[in-house]
Structure formats: structure tokens, C-alpha cells
Image (cartoon, rainbow, N blue to C red; front, side, top):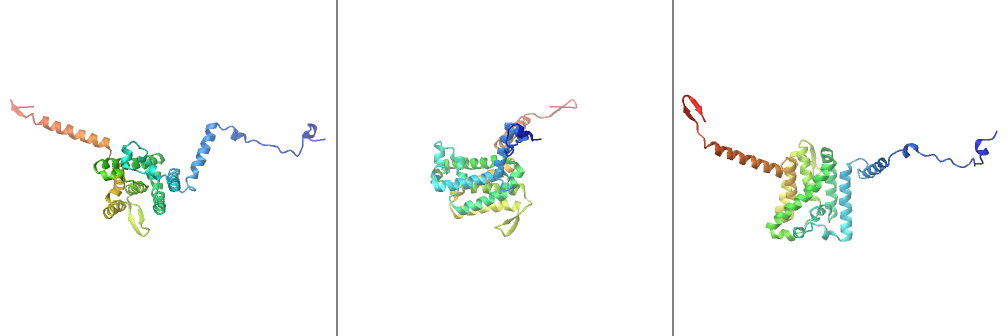
Length: 266
């Protein structure tokens, strides 16, 4: 008795193709989500950092290399005078480019060390928003100061270090008890690292050109205000409350208590 494939005239050596019916039944949206998830895993560097931190590291390295090879730094650096002329993209793009390998290397290492903990504490969305927000905020403060200090209008700023130092300050405030090796040698607590970061920036500003460190100081002060919960809205509300209290005290001084027929009248 012959096999069935002989009766139908088919070749027994022909391979049989099997389909993954479970995969085929997946909706199109699920397949896209799998692809996005697999792409995001590439930026985790083997699960060592969140994808957001790895993406920022990759963007800074790639942009720095492309900017150096393509000589396109002049179109992305922060120049307050050009920002006031309408080139607002410079408020953010300046922080993704480094012009020297040593600052690029140590900047990426610092972002790798502190960015991981901050991303876990804040979440990916808040971490990315804080990174870009501090970059834009420090640039905006620099541009406002440039309206009062004219030499700043023509001064170019570029590099991720102002934002990275601000993230270092944030890490120190959120984790004040954690130990970190300062200069790879001296163990210090997070609360001490805040003052070392601010003091070191001021020291560099004094011995170098102070105007060159305006974005660094602006970014760190903005990050301190952000971590402490300060905001323009909160400041405005506190000023309004104090104004209402002063009005209430002035109105209260218009009244006096008099005694009449053993009763206190207002």
C-alpha cells in the first residue's frame, strides 16, 4: 500500500512549510509594539541603563561626531544674539554637541552614572523632559542676561556639561545619603556633592572667564529650584497670599473695640 502522497502525484522529498499560526494571529499593533520594544532594547546597552539614558548618550556621541566631521557646529551652538533674531532651535541643540574628546568621554560617563538613578527615580518621560527643559531654561536665562550684558550676545556656548552638572546636583539632592567617589578617590555623600559642584563651577568661573559659565550656573540653580519644588506659579501664588495678608492687616487697623453696656462691640 502506497503512501498518500504517491497517490496524489506529489514528491515525497518536497519540504513541508509550517506557519507560525500564533504569530500570524497577532494584531498589527502588537507586531509594531514588538519592533519598537526591540529597538529600544538596543539603547539599554545590555540592560545596564534605561533606554532613555542610552538614547541620550547615543545622540550626544553621534551629534558630536557628525558636527565635528561636517563642520556644522556654527548652526547649532547657543549664541544669544542669534536666538533673539529668531533662531530658537539653538535653545536646545547646543547641549547635544561636544567639540573635544575628553569632555565628551567624561560627560557621557557622568550621564551614565547619575542618569540611570535619576531615570529610575523620575521615570523616563520626566527624565527626558527635565533634561531638555533644563537645557532650554539655562539657555533662556543666558539670553535674558545677554540683554543686560552685551558681550554675551556674541558669545557662543556649546556642550552638554551645563545640563550634566545640573543632573549631578539633582542626583545629590534626591540621594543625599549615598556615597560617591569624588575624583575616583575621595568618598563623599550626596549632600556634599551639591556644594562641591556649585563651588567648583564658581571656582572655574573666577579663574577663567565668568561669562563662559553663565549657562552652567543657570542650569544648576534651575535644577535646585526644580528639585525643591519651586516654580514661577508657586512664587506668584505666595506673593498674592502675602498681598492679601497685608490688605487684611490694614483693614483690621481701621476697627477698634469699644465697651458699651458690658458688651464688647466691634
